[in-house]
Image: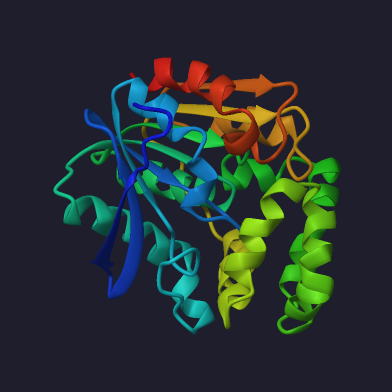
Length: 275
């Protein structure tokens, strides 16, 4: 792929949402799912590597993010509803089976898809976030890294605090100033910050109480050695929740937003696995 070529933008009706989707390349389909507080822009540096490797990339703005519809209710953002968007998107594009790569909250959705739809996915690359049960049982260090969950669950208060001084706290929390301009543009629109936070509010407590099923497709976990929110242990321990082949890689110098800053390193590890 020409490094300067732009992916095709489409808007599709998926589960009664207007879903904005980036499409690029030809070959084996590869679905990319972003997390909070991102959009499909997260994948901009990785897409050329994947297209050059022979993949047809499908990168949606997930519900509530980017240019996709943001439903108003917290209940609109359950893992089950979000996962059903991914399956409906593949159906709308006429794709029976695809590879899967996902990051942050998108990775949690990816773990659910890998568990409940093994007939639709040939393999799964989980970026940063391990299996939810492994993350919840990863010990005190992981719990301390997840302190911000408590803030995000405080409806109204979290919106005020995060948006103060032009989203300055969000910049401080993430240590990722280069991406803040994209987040500010997206989240400053009416209702959009609440929509993103509703991913936490609809799922954190129910997920802690439920038995999250194991993955039933081959899984490759990739985590950055400098991830501010997640430990290597929660990725390593995910092996116990994979019924197929599992391997993991640590990129020592990668941060949580490695799709932006470590695209070449991810592609070297992931492309061989996915093929």
